Each structure stands twice: as C-alpha cells, then as structure tokens.
Length: 124
Length: 105
Length: 300
Image (tube, rainbow over all chains, first blue to last red; front, side, top):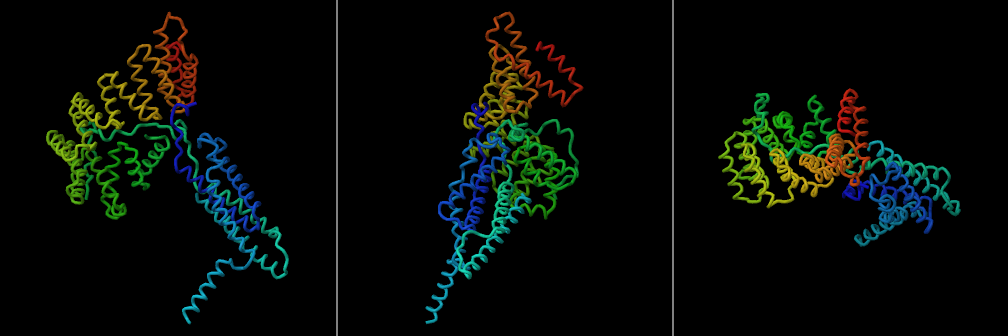
C-alpha cells in the first residue's frame, strides 16, 4: 500500500551485484559440470536452465521467501542475469569438452605446434 | 563471507578433481577403444557434491540482501543529521570548557 | 539521514572508542558522513590521531580533511588554540585556499569577533558569489548574535538562489517554529516533504506544526501526516501515535454537536491507542497507569 505513495523502490546496485555474482558463478560451475558430463547440444542448454532454476529457488530461499521486501518484482530474482550468464556457461561448457579428444586441449597443442614452426623458420 | 568463500573453494577443488578423473577415464577408454557414454559413478557423485557446495557458496559469499522499504527495521530513519552548516559556536557549552591539556603537537 | 542500522553502528563504535578499543578513524569517518555533532569526541580522538605521526601519515590525503574536521570541532568546544594550530597546518599545506579561508573566518566567528568575521565572509563571497557554505555561515552568524530576523532575511535570499537545499529549508523551518510563525514553518516543511518524501521526521514535524496551528482542516491534515509518519516508521514512532490520539480528541471537540457524517476512519485512534498501550507494556510497564488515565481523559 505504501509503495503506491512513496518512491521507495530503489534497488541499490549492491543488491544487483549480489544477484549478478550468484548467477555468473553458477553459470560457470554449471558449464564445467556440463562439459565433464559430456552433454551435447540441446541437453546442455536444458541443463543450463535447470541450474538457473536451481539458483532462482536458492535466491528466493535466501530472501526468506519474502521477495517484495528486497526486490521490486519477481523478474529480478527469476530472470535477471539468466541470459548474460549463458555466455559464461557456453565458454566453460566447450572448454572441458576438449577433454574428449586429447590429454591436452587442442588450443595448447596448436600453440606448441606454432611455437615449433616459428622456431624452425627462425633457425633456417 | 569467510565461511561461504571457503565452501566455494572446496567445491571448486572437488570439481577439479572430478575433471582430472574424467581425463584419466577418457584416456583409459581411448586405450581400450570404447565409446564414452558418461563419466563413472564416483565422478558423478563428486559433481553433485561440488554443485551443491558451489550453490551454497554463491548464496553465502557475496553478502546479504538489504530491505528496500523505508519503514523496515534497518532502514527506518531515526534521526536527522545535525545541521552542521548552520552550527553556532556561542552556545551554552561554552561555559564548560574541555580538558585544557588538549593540544596539537 | 541517520537510519537505525547506522545509529547502532555509531553507538557501537563510540563505546569501542571510549573504552580504548580502537576503530577511532572509522568512528570519525562515520561521524563525518552522518554529519553528527559529536565535537568533544571528534576533538579528543581526532587529536590523538593527529598527534601520532605514524597514524597520521597512514591516512594519506585524508589527513587534511581530518585537520579540517578537528578544527571545526575545536571551535565548537571553544578550544581556540587547537583550532588555530590546525588551521595553521592547513595554511602551510594549501596556501591561498578558499576552504582554509573559510575556516579562518569561522575561527574569527568562534572568537566572537563578529565584524571581522563578517568582513572575511564578504571578501570570500566577492571572490566566489556562489559559495553555499559561506552564505550559510552568514545566516548562522546572524543567528548567533540573536538577530533572527536578519537570519530569516539571509536565508530567504539564499533559498531564492539555491532552492533545492533541504538543509536550509529545515533551518528556516526551525527558526520560524522558534519564533512561533507556524504558517511559514508549515510552508517550509511542505517543501521538505516534497524534496524528501520518505523521511518520517519531516512528516512528523509538519503534523506537529499543523496541530499547533489548530482549526478543523489543519487538524484533519495533521492526523493524516501523523498516520503517514506511522507508516514510514513501521509503527515505531510514539510521538505520532500520541499525535493521532490528540488530533482525534481535538477534532471530536470541534465537531461536537454536528452530524457525524464526515468522521473518517474511526478505527485509527483506537488502533493507535492500542499500539501505545502495547508499547508501554513492553518498555515501561510502570507508566502504563499514567498512559491509560491520559487516554481516558482524551475520551478515547
């Protein structure tokens, strides 16, 4: 009732940074886990949204289930940072999946080959 | 902050151990020339444990939410600041001087 | 604005500092940030930092703001020598600075040399006509000399230039209240509520002024503002709860004999009386009988 009279819904950037931290961290961890499990294409994305749903539930629990005393809308806690976290997720998802092909991830092999080649060029 | 951060570090450590185990497992599969269908059960358990620990850390480490309502217990205004720009010096406190030994060296 | 969390933090730090538990610098920062007038503490503990060259140099550039803070506190405590020494240090560091010039003029003011201080402030204003602090010091000086009408003039002129300065509006309101010019004070409080609608203390002060003015319409408005104070403090404002009771009783006396159609929210006063009783029961059970006899005399 009060909220309709007073401009009190000012969310401090501090709270938003907390949300962003939680989301990004969980996206990274989820990405690594998806990579280790060897999930492919669609299953990986489904896994990501499962992890995000888990995070949302945990955030709601952290706000002691009274969302409106900490946030202006449910969107803040359910959606904010979900799609931004997708980038981090994809990065960490693809990286451990190199494990499938070699002991060394391919970029490292490429790098060492490149070093050898340039060394040979220099010597000749 | 401290406890949450520690839990996160433990979670990441378990996760890296799981990664290492998977690399070993895949190397083994390569030698025996079998298809990879999924990591072994102990790795899966490690993954679940680390996911739970990291979720805990993600909730505990970055700090607590603060109420946005002006009438909540922590936000409610209890006093106005002293209007320092308009402070006057010839008030009644003049009669009670402080200890005289205060001195800037 | 000092919120409850901040107040608790200040009290905790103050206890800690008084008992020699460290945290002096944090305490001084908090006092500076919240604009509290704890001059004796600032003087004593600020000097303890400034006199310790190791602690002082650990502050880095914050050292100089501490000198300024201590100088003003020293003037407030009439330790003119300390203030003079602090200003001298600042002068050596920042020759020709206007901020230091301001401090010097304030020192003249603290010593009671009104005409010299006035001259110093005028010359500062000539250099920079939009120096808000100097304008405000002139108001304070007029007030210190007991010349409230001049203070009001200065303040009105100042507010023509800087209308968004809520501290000046508050000062003007307080001066008007001290002169019993409640209509003008009410206007100032309206401005304050407009600029900072979530501060319950302005609602409370406005309601107080309106209640003092009297008259049916004012009383009804006062009741509304007491109610908004209660909403903004989460029901923790005893004064506002009493205000509701007093307003209801006064309105009841004014409208006696008339038809009761325009009686609004009759449950408001019984609720606030109940809240008061609950609060007293919890915090001062000995005074409960006094409270209930007061409420009975108000016919609630």
